[in-house]
Length: 77
Image (cartoon, rainbow, N blue to C red; front, side, top):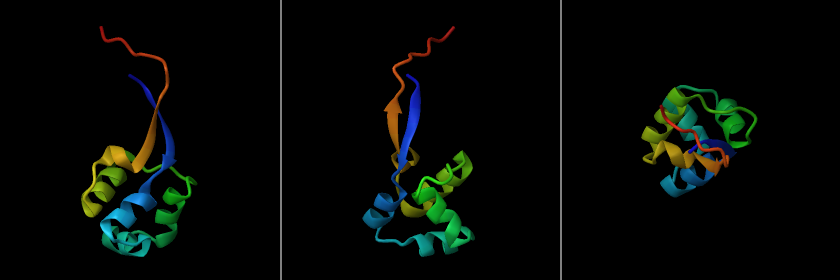
């Protein structure tokens, strides 16, 4: 099944982990503005960054965004 990315759920995951955006930025050596851009859907997290974020806050990488089924099934060969 194919998915579209919905809104970013990073803020919710940070709250669940008891962490702040500033903490995450410091942990990953990012400027806080970059983390806020992800949270406000101004930019999409590249996969490598999403994996690092998920590892840092202890969540599954797939829970960082709403996943919306596209309705188009992709068939394998």
